[in-house]
Length: 240
Image: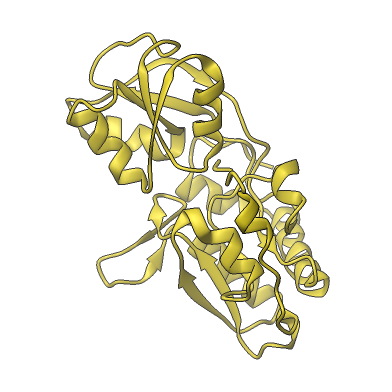
């Protein structure tokens, strides 16, 4: 799961707006570029595991919701500044983020991170691509390998193909289908377990809204609906 590396500028944002609970429509912020968690389908609509999950959570919480897309590197600042009311975007629950926003309980378990390359590489000394501001980028930076960062997941794959990087590190759920569908790409090296599961993000002032979604997530866990969605969209994920 991805973890935004927060800058001083990002920390400076303040909400300055009414609590999300007062909105007639709850705006659900996502990236729309990280299948199967979230992506834009051929009809130009947000799709994927988190779209199905979010729609069900909104129904259970009796909320009217709409979907908003935002680039990953500014997704937390734009939540804090009020451009939408929640983040549901494959976001890892981390202590660093928790200093700036609040989280629901997790709706997925941690997903292993894997390396994807065009051939076997020494992942501890190679040039490794990762999306900017992710837990994978932080891991590579500390590992001794050479990190090259890109704004989008697609760009990390392109970097491997054009020789800018020897491999890319990202979630298994994102990279394994790419390896399965492309003869020139393969999973290489050892898997890495980083991150602490995925949850929804909220402004710290929106405790009531967070509570509504938390209760809805728990109800999906209790009746098995969440595990059914995981089986459909993330079949290799550990269930609750």
